[in-house]
Amino acid sequence: MAERELKKKTTTTRESNEVVEEEVSAKSESAEKLKADLDDLLDEIDEVLEENAEEFVRNYVQKGGE
Amino acid sequence: MSIPKICGIETEYGISVVGAADMNPITSSSILINAYANEVAERTRWDFDGETPQRDARGMDSLVSFPPEVETHLVNTVLTNGARLYVDHAHPEYASPECRTPRDAVLFDRAGEIVLRRAMAAAQGGMPRGQSIVVYKNNSDGKGNTYGCHENYLMDRATPFVKIVRYITPFFVSRQIFTGAGKVGSEAPGLDHSVVPFQLTQRADFFEEEVGLETTLKRPIVNTRDEPHADASRYRRLHVIIGDANLSEYASFLKVGTTALVLAMIEDGALDDLDIVLATPVRSLRQISYGLDLKTEVPTVGRGEMTALQIQWEYFERAVKYGDREGFEALGSEDQGAWLLEEWERILSALERDPMELADTLDWVAKLQIVSGYRERHGLAWSDSKLAAIDLQYHDLRPEKSLAARAGLRTLVPEEAVIRAVTEPPTDTRAYFRGRCLEKYRDSVAAANWDSLIFDVGSDPLRRVPMMDPLRGTAHHVDTLLERSGSVVELLRGLGAEG
Image (cartoon, each protein chain N blue to C red):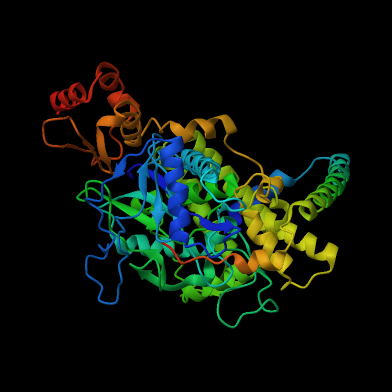
C-alpha cells in the first residue's frame, strides 16, 4: 500500500502553482461541460423513455435462466 | 508458467414481446433464433455429446445439487464466427467463441449484441401486426427473476480447485465495484427503496452460497461445474456465474482481463502470500453492492474490516509484480496486459476519489448518473416506476431505445471490427477451425460442438473430428490445409495425414 501511495504522490505533484491553477480551471470547465452533456442526455431520455413507464416495467417479467 | 487463459462470455438475454406481453418466452426466443438461423445465417445442428453440466469440480456428486437439464429440443445453432446461438431455458443465449485475449472476449461479446439485433430485425417479418420481439442485455427483471452472463476461463487441471476457490473468492466479491451494471432497488426480501435505492450490481441479490454446482437456485460465488469442453486430463474450464452483462466495453475488458490475470497468478503461485479470507463472503457480496460510496467494510479472518477497494489494491499490487516477473503471455498479449494494469490502476484510483468520474467508463456509474439526474430533475421518489423503466431501458438493444448507447460510454473496439466479428472467427483458437469449416463446408457439417465437428461425407458413417485442445485449430495450424482442401473428403484426408 505504501508503495502505491508514494507512486500516486509523485505522479500528481506539480512543479509550479501555475500548472495547478490551469488544471483547476480546466477541471471546472470540464465539470460544466459534463453537466451540460448530462442535461442534454436527460432531455433525450425524456423523449425516448417508454411512454407508460408503469406498464412497461410491470410487463417486463422474465423466467429465471442459467 | 500458467497456461493461456482462453476465455469467452455467454450471455442470456432478457426477452419481451411488445403487443403480446403474455407470449411464452420459449416461443419468442425460438422465433428469434430461428429467424436469425434461417434468414441471416445457415443452420448447423449443435451436438450434445460431451455436455456434462452436472459434473462437479470438487470430484463428488453433491446430494443436494440439481444439475441443469440440457434441453435438446430447443433451438440451437452455431455461427461462422465460432459462437453458439440458442434458446436456453426461456432466454435467447449467445455464447462467444473461445478467445485468446480479453480484448477479443469483448469484441465477440459485442458481436453477439449485433447478432441479437439482427435477429430482432429478422424476426419482425414473421410477427403479427403490432407485435415485436425486444431483447435486453441485462440480468434481472426487477421482480426476483435473474438470468446469467457467464465467463469461462481455461485452467490447468493441475491447479487444485480448493486453491482457486481460496484466492478467487475475495476477488469476485470485490471486483463488482467495476464490473457491476447497476440496479435501481433490491430484489432481496425485505429491502425496499428506502434501504437500497440503487446498487452496484444486477446479480448480488441472488447469491446464496460460497461454492456449489447450481446455477438456477442457491447460486454460488464460485461455481463448480466441471465440464472442460477440452482434454479433461490437462484442462478445466472455470465457469464464472457471478458477473453482470456489461454494455460498457471497458467494464467488460476489465472484468475479463483482471479475472484472467488473477487466475494466471493463482496457477503460478503469485497469490500464495495473499492472506485475505472473507469471514462472510455471501453477506459481504451484498453489502458491497449496496454501498455506493464504496466505503463499506466487510469482515475478514485475521485482517479486520476491509473495503472492496482495499482488497482490489492488494490483488493489483501483486499483479504489477507478477507482470514484471512473468509478462502477460497468459493474456495472449503483452500490450494488453500492460494496458490492463494501467486501466485497473486508473479505475481503482478514480473509484477511491469519486466514482462519478467514471460515468463514461463503468456501467453502474453511467446508469446511476442518469437515474439520479432524472430523479432530481423531476423530483421523483426512488420507487417511481420511471426510474425502474430507465434501468430497464439502459439495457434495451434497440438502437432507437437504448440508453446505454446514449450514455457517452468510451469504446474500446472499432465498430468495423465488431461487424467483422459477427461472421469471422478469432484466428488464434480452435474457434477458427470451427468457424471456417462452417463457412467453407457448410453442407457437410452435420453437427458442431465446442470440442468436435461432425462431418457427413456422404456414403460413409459420420466422421467426428475431435478438437480437444482449445489452442489448436488456429489459422496458423489449419489455414494451409483449409486452402488446399476443396472438399471435406480432402480436409479429412489432410487431417488424417497430419495425425
